[in-house]
Amino acid sequence: MPEPWLSIIGLGEDGPAGLPPASRDALDRAEIVLGGPRHLALAGIARPRG
Image (cartoon, helix red, strand yellow):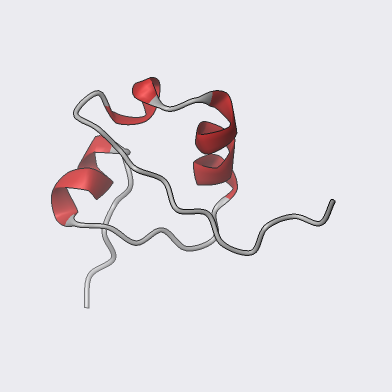
């Protein structure tokens, strides 16, 4: 099966620790991650400036 080109992951208050392994893996391999500032902070992702 080919790799998906898009993954949509719902992140709760417990952050990545609450994600199933497949979702954590997709987040770790992501080239681009979109989300609100609070969710990006929960995931430990720094928001680019500018």
